[in-house]
Image (cartoon, rainbow, N blue to C red; front, top):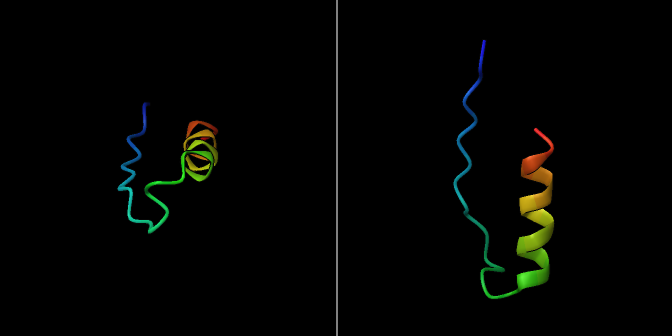
Length: 30
């Protein structure tokens, strides 16, 4: 059974590409 994980970017560091990369990498671990 596949699961759907919805991730809504709701963070204030939207201009900091390093932090965005960290968040994306954590999401991909799910």
